[in-house]
Image (cartoon, rainbow, N blue to C red; front, side, top):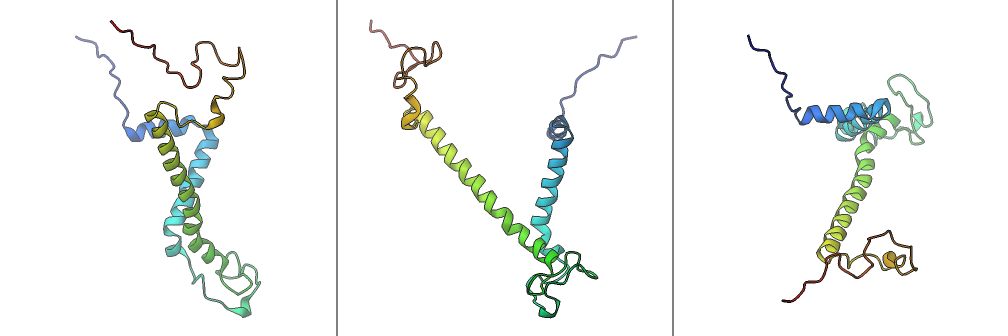
Length: 154
């Protein structure tokens, strides 16, 4: 009789994502749930709105929660819950645009810096190396010099 040898089966992508989420602890899981709900509302909020978000009714202005209107009415008598659900998509587009723009700018700067071997660094980035002895970690190259040793001619 042969003994069975346990074999580790690599977890799929979903398994790794769940493991990483669990590793964040309760705060990370709660944050992920809030982000998932906000994304769902942003995608489907206009379809979930129970009333027309732009329909005014001045006789209901400033009325608090009543009947099927869970959050009440604003100063023009529009349903506040419907306006929140309908406006969620536009309020998520602004931060999304900032994140995408920052990623593009960072990628362009990183590629440019790598292409030019650090020449695209900000002008004040090398000022610490000119400050004097001991201002750089041992073995770190000074600004403007390559880390590679020069080639010797034969």
